[in-house]
Image (cartoon, rainbow, N blue to C red; front, side):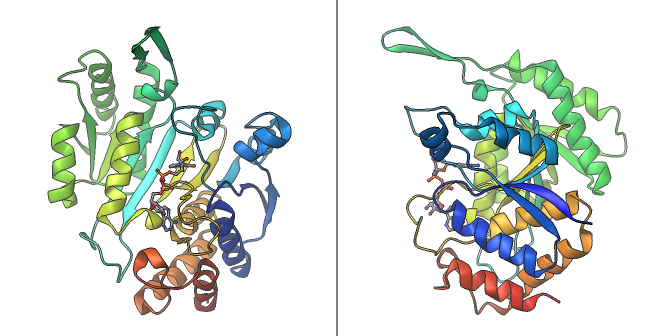
Length: 333
Ligand code: NAI
């Protein structure tokens, strides 16, 4: 059955890796009708808003989007469009699998864990103000509703995907009220899933453990800011940002995107690695029950890595984004 999907090419390397991914999906016979919408800085310039209504409506209608990275100006300018989009659609669960691909030089080739990040609140609420010149206040919002919801999502994910353990990362020793509430909700949710082990770790120790013994973790759940930082750390454990996919999931829909950003340092050169966004598209295909196509593309991708002849620059090769996509297409069955 054909499926409509909203396509957001994004900024920087976004259009390059999205074009490569769309080509692979089409070659695999994914039967998707793409509705392309521009959001972010380009939309602001042309339409006076970073998220035009028709783009939001398209995602709400289709309930599925594949999105390239969007640039957020540092220290000035408009606030993050990614954060705004997640809030507007209440995409509360950010799911980031961390799994190495064969033949990729990395510290933990056997690693297989999943990060579940709360996506709607915490210090990302954007509530900042100047108290007096030289003093600013940034509010960390943690609610029982969002903490319980993300914790339940993590346990539900573990049950569905036959995972054995969920670990909460927090700093409840210092932020006794906010992280304390998050932790309390975590254990409340855990009580409904007796077959899944629940444990918690203070985030600073947890980061050290992740670098030294990451195989002890299975599913990890945490607040927004910790999740943002820890998922980049985990991408580093399996070979870099070019390989880490993600999904933002809520009741109203799901937006699939790579963990990495718009990589302005390599944009426009056609050398970005499309693997992370392709893996995100594979997650999307599974979400819409196109399992055979997802498996076909995943196997082809794994074959390309196993063979090791076609590699992008970040993987030590000199193949272009488009050449990498061609190699995956050639391996499709
Ligand atoms: P970044 O992830 O864009 O880049 C970090 C480093 O990784 C750079 O050296 C880049 O060249 C490399 N890299 C990233 N993706 C790659 C790929 N697919 N292939 C090869 N190399 C890759 O992070 P940075 O520089 O901190 O952020 C740039 C912009 O992206 C910022 O405006 C930031 O706000 C935005 N951003 C957007 C995200 C999103 O749309 N979901 C997520 C993260 C950042």
